[in-house]
View 1 (cartoon, rainbow, N blue to C red):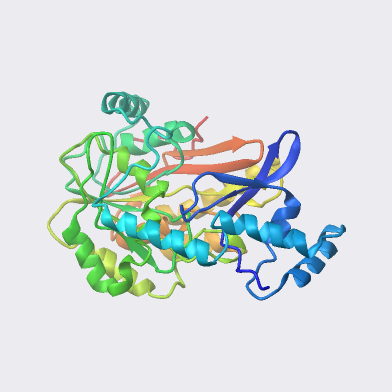
View 2: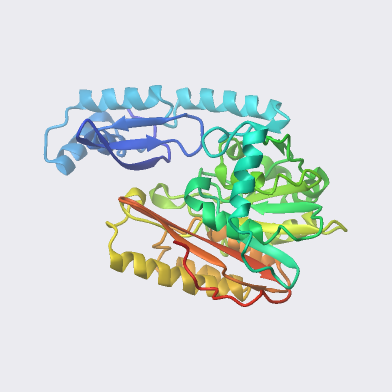
Length: 410
């Protein structure tokens, strides 16, 4: 019997009852929660390629593990993964189609991370967001118009100070009629861009989507523009920044997340410059905001993801220092609105820093025709097995009140 291929999954080390295990998470959002399996079971499952039978997989697993793996063990692993919808088989297809149809029937995209990333109660939410913005009360004001913004999409707790710096820049701006949020897909996609016409639910009511702007985008992208719309269901990269500017209830928002097919090894850090349809994507995004509405473009973009959690080496002072140096070099290109330079700086050597903000920042730089970026915050969010770096960079048609743009948040 040939086993269906394993789906692209997030896999990272996990300790359970003192044992080293592997935690699996579905980036597509079909399966909620995590499945924790032994490293041996995960290695067996990783051999499911849609071509080999149990005997061949058992033989290869025996060779790699240095221990006997019988074909019946392979069959039990396949059964477990199929029951959890983690293989490309009939079980998954049935669940996948049902969830897509359910999502398609809902006019509003539900707040997937309310209650975990931010409060669900409107009063508590206002206090939380107000507290974040208060952190930036004394930061310098720009002496110019804000044309675009690079801001994090990491969870609010880890990114609090950087969120404050980023969105604090907007507090004195005149009314913004539309925000174009460029996000990263943390799940696999097939199209260059994945727009949605759905409003986004927030604790203060729905953030309305400018459907006319989305229609202009889709007119350039073509009929398959919504093929990956389901990826919005659980994606946090647009939800987090979408909620932060929400206290200005008169705003309208256009969202179009540049989401790419994941590269090999299950990574979902997207490519942009050489992606098929790249020119159409650029024309479409420009068409979306080519009207009289005052539009702010936000790249909701974290930076490097290094450490064992992301399949890299253990964290050392040298690795963290090298990561920050490389990040800052790439951000220098971004500040100069050099999209090609940003892309080269990130992808040199195969994107060793797993920069998940590669595409949103790339498209932001492609959309901006003037101004310069000012790096007003940079932070390393460290944990024992990982480090995620984030930054705040507004693009202005003038200057900031002088400050050292290379200060690192503590």
